[in-house]
Amino acid sequence: MSLAIEDYALIGDCHSAALVGSDGSIDWLCLPRFDSASTFAALLGDEEHGHWRLAPVGAGRCTDRRYDGDTFTLVTRWVTDDGEIDVVDLMPMGGRRADVIRRVRGVRGTVRVEQVLRIRFDYADAIPWIRQSVEEGGDGEREHALIAVAGPDSVVVRGPRLIADDYAHRAEFDVAEGETVDIVMTWYPSHRTPPPMPDVDERLDATATWWSDWTSRLDDDGPYAAAVRRSLLVLRALTHEDTAGIVAAATTSLPEQFGGGRNWDYRYVWLRDAALTLQALMLHGFGTEAEEWRGWLLRAIAGDPADLQIMYGLAGERRLPEWEVASLPGYQGAAPVRVGNGAYTQFQGDVFGEVMLALQQARRIGVAENEVSWPLQLALLNNLESNLERDDHGLWEIRGVPRRFTQSRAMIWAAFDCGIRAVREHGLPGPVERWVELRDALRVEIESQGFDEARGTYVQYYGGTEVDASLLTLAQIGYCAPDDPRMLGTVAALETDLLHDGLLLRYRTTSGVDGLEGDEHPFLACSFWLVQQYAMSGRLADAEALMDRLVGFANDVGLLSEEYDTRAERHAGNTPQAFSHLTLVRAADAIARARE
Image (cartoon, rainbow, N blue to C red; front, top):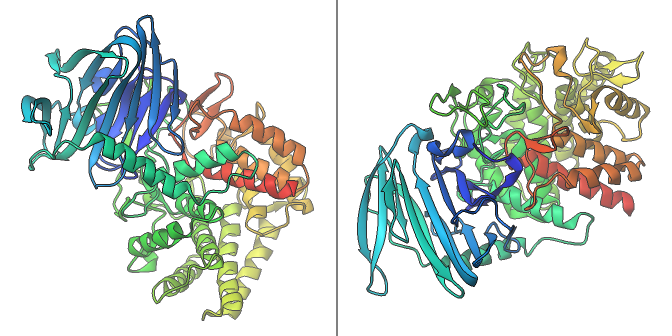
């Protein structure tokens, strides 16, 4: 059975990523992209669905593990009765290759190491044809290689000789103090010849340099500096190096409710999540990423603005049909496993606001508009005006009846406000008088239909009485002041209705608004929003207390999933989750400003 979600660490090359368990097993890996079919999928089943374990013979869990500085090079320490070893796992940066390197280093004594490899392509639906090969190494010696092929996929694994054993391959070898054993797996299209063995020392150095160069712009002076630093690294690791598309998470179908069916594929680019990620990066000095993502956006939504989607593939692919994977039983039995995401066809009005706010932030840090970028924004606002009377599925992309969600209407307000500011503050052309009229009419509408006067709170949707954690964003986007009585009344209602063991739920699933069965755990981003609200409204002690607790939920290498099960004290939902990490960054920034 797969491990607890928090027992996994991420390695990645900004093209794809793998999850490495504390037992030394890679249980999730899709090659060559985040959204490719899996090569190892034991995470969503068991070892028969593909895994790659490297650990001392008879060992259970590792002694310790850490990232090598500001990288995603994972160093796992194993201490046994016979000695100590380090296993260094990474997906090297650069070179446009799909490599996984596993280096075993002898630290003390002599340790017997076991390697178990089960390759299962296409979500464990394809057991490959495997053959042994012998190659000539760079030093003239003969080296062992194992080649696996199924359909369009092929990998070559180089290292100690592997022996077939009941649809798996195994090897055992000794590693003494001072010795190094390298094992490298490389994916390549099956119609091509295997790529050459990489120079492992060179790839280790190049990877360390790549991450060092990227993090050289980071400022460590703020509160929660270590958590912020790792969160920004996670956001970069989830950003595709070539396309600049930012995936919401590295996984699919990790459950929001253990044993339940709220399991979704997050390996795509949500405009909302990507725009919010971009804002977090820009606020910490990463302007280049802003320009690159804007290029991705222009390519993805090129054509008729009326065809705007809420999400796309990594390169801007538009068709993301959702289907259930019969070959995988699900994480610890939570079925179904889904690939694709049916929400891509939904209309979500808040997306316009998030995109316009991100592009506004880019202007403010000096990213100049070009002959395409501002006309694109004009077209988006024109399309938004054409859809003003349209109900939507809201921030949480509910699968129930579309409604007038208050947060969506406020984000539409923000979109027009961004357009007005672009004209007035940056001299860009646009129908500013019309936008002012639309923006002001939206405020009147929200205040009259999205606010419960009797209770003194904004509501989830027009005509309803429920509240929603997304209402906390109204103060963040400038719709109202954080200490406005209406905002404070909303916070009080959220604390009364949605706090669960001290963490904030998104909404009450028992209301039936989302059209889904089952329940879920507190969504971590909502609690980080609450931290931000506390800090902005003078409740600094409350902000710090909640922030300390939330940061403590990160696993041993600083990763956060989508949700947290407070009763079982374990991560839930897809991991690592961009939304959780970006809201951590913004919450820390809010605390820093409040302290000042």
